[in-house]
Structure formats: C-alpha cells, structure tokens
Length: 295
Image (cartoon, rainbow, N blue to C red; front, side, top):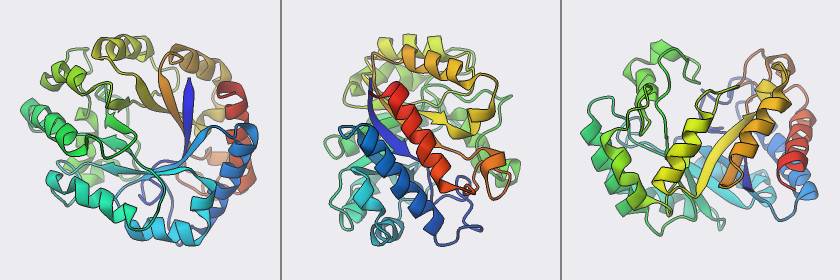
C-alpha cells in the first residue's frame, strides 16, 4: 500500500533541480505548496514528505520553512552518502540529523543512505552494519539505496555524467545485488537490518527487474520501500499501464512513492530538472496519481 508521497528528489542538488532558472527556489516552493495542498485534498491521511535533500543543508530547510513549504508537508527527508559523495564522515550521521532538527519540528526521514562497492564489496558490507548502528532509532524511515546496481548500459540520472569523474561511476555500484543477479557480500546481512530498515529502489519505465525485486525484498524481510513515479514519463507510450503494473506488484509493501522530474515539453527548459512552465500541472499530476494509487 502507499503510505506516503514524496515531493521531488534532491531539490537542492543541481542534478535534480535547475537552480540557474530558479536560483532562490521560489518556483519550487510554490510548486510544492500547491502539490501538498492537492494531495491533502485527495487523501488527508497520506504522509507528505519534502523530497530528500542532498547535501544535508539546514539553510535550505530553513529557506523552505520561511517560504511556507513546511506548512504543506508532514515530514522532511535527507540523503547521505558519506563514504562516496559527501564531505563528512559516517560517524557524523547523528550530528547531521541534529542540524535539521534544529530548524524544524517535523519528523526527519532518511530516504536514501548507501555505500557503493566502487572500491570493494567489503566497504559496503562494513558500511551497512555501521549505518544501521548509527541510525537505529533516530528516524521513522531509513531507506537503503539500493537493491540493484544500475545496469552499465543505462545512464545515471545526473546532468553532467562522465564529466563528474569517479563520482558519476559510483552510481553504478550502489546495489546489494549486481547487474547479473549475483548478491554482494552486504546482501547476506540485510535481513539483520530489516524490517527496521527499508529500501529505496528506482524502477525505470518498463523496468525488467521488477519481479526480481519483489523476490529479493521478500527474501531479505523488507517491509517498506521508496520508489518513484516519474512525471517525465507521462508522455511515454501507455505510461498508465506500466504504473499500474508497478504499483500492483508493490501492493504488499508499505510504499513511499516519489513524484518528480519534469517532462521536457512542460519545462521552462527542455530538461527533467527544469521548473515547469505551469506549476499547477505538477499538482494535478500528483493528485491524479494519489486518486489512482493511494485512496
């Protein structure tokens, strides 16, 4: 079942929101407020979560509070990857959560945390155990990113791609399971973290890994999952058929569904990170998806 909706993904990350077009996130703030209101009108019991921020930045959360965004959500979320992308150490996790608690009374969800096997599987194995040790009891939701490695033939959702150097290639090594279906060392330990820890797994349009994901999550004892329904896929061929299949397959898990990414033809710029020309279109999309999947 759908237990929560998340509004956007890493809005303070230039790979997911075009801050050159919207430098003070004013359009973003208005868009999220409108979407939050629309979702509450459809299902007032549904938890609305502000899209997980990366980097963890209390100033950004404070700015969202000043603009009234936090009045239209029920929780805020953060993403942390201290062993791969962030400039802080893994033992700083409690402090990072505390920095956000200082600026909001809302619950803080950790909607993505993970460790890549870019250097060695043993790093991820240790990182999973250490992450659970540090985060146990500190957040209502901790989503490990991710179940599967990103296939080498698929692009990572980031704007500058190979120009990012090793930071880009780490995207392909975040899973507990390799592209060929082989479990990594950390996979055998995940049942020790579940059900307290859930997963974050993005599914691409018509993703062939969906059935395999269900199998792995049941094996690992996972009870809750974060995934997405991409607004940018609205103009794919028969998107409702795919979304119906995805959400039906996930119905036995507690699902947080993320609504994000602008269809190119709807954006100020022709890119998934662009603010939409009409912020009401995003709110309408969110309301429609809630009516269909979260009644």
